[in-house]
Length: 513
Image (cartoon, rainbow, N blue to C red; front, side, top):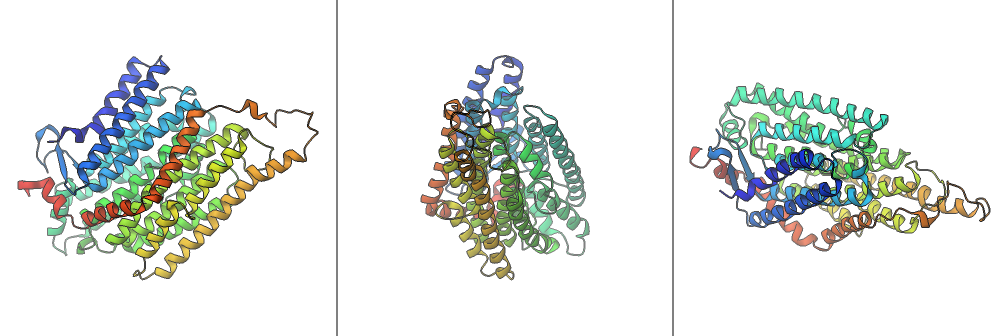
């Protein structure tokens, strides 16, 4: 077995409690170990991505127990892409938290960050549905601690709402797993795929119920309308560097839909046919519309970006719900783009809030206004899917993949109208925050008058490392645009592997099949 495969789960699981027990009073050492762990995670995941690039599927049997009786981790192109994206984003957030000082505003930030990475990485690697639930709970607990980092009544209220809503989802998850286990006798994903395919068509009522409950759980995690209500307040009131990390969390729900409903309840499985395609596509289009309208009506920059994240999830889920290899490839490319774009905008929003507050109103100039406005502009066109950044290419791929769909004209209309409304919403916010604020300063009190409302640019927070991280995300979007061809080839190969699950099943079950 390739022991490197379990390292993305074990490494943060060791570093996090070590930070809590041995370094809780030494912030500088916490930073060293957190960044060191994140760098090592990035190197490990990149190495695993290289190994998976040729299409080889690797498994890791914990305790050397073979599937389906033992717990397995599975590395294929899809899981390799997602863990690499997570590790790089985790490194960016760790560096930003240090550069901006966010890790000094509460306790155990770096330990919670490592636990969060452990949960997300484990969810992407596991080959067992029950352990997918376990890793969901790990990332839920860690994310709650990160949400309330820094304290405050509003943040605590949003955190409680977030936990309650997601605990309801977790309860439904257990019901779904219990139902599936009662029908099939297994929760190993590959073994589930075999047993579901063998079930007689007249004995599938419980199976359909379990599949539908699973879809509802993943829809909650992916913030699909009407199950999205937890996201705007939760993300907007969380520390925005934490919200940047949460940009990958909604992708866990999208990943789970793509994984389970191509491997286990695939389009060729008569017992569960239509469960996803009949419901998910209309819900995804409504999610995109609701997110775009939310962007247009937002009055606070954190909520502006949160609704932008909802709109991007709508676009992503439209592609997933088409359930073709071409659409899945487009969805994977858009996953890379939307994660980087949402993280970028949350960090830019944090820079704005640190300088002038979060309200989208003209209040006067802020330090480093020109630089921050340029970063805001780059993030806005990325989230709206405007050229020349990768969001434009991603939406073109999604629209092209929908050409043969029955609702093609509706899909195109929703995506194009959503992009237009989103860019208008971001333009309105940028005008209020940067342009009108600058004009207000010109027509304000005489120059010799100095007030606290108009800070001197000399007093601007330095945050050099924080700005370097933001520019790094912009560079990531630029690279995703420049290398769209090679990245698209990888996502096409990944989608082809997803829609031909025989190799996955054979790798996991082997002779036990």
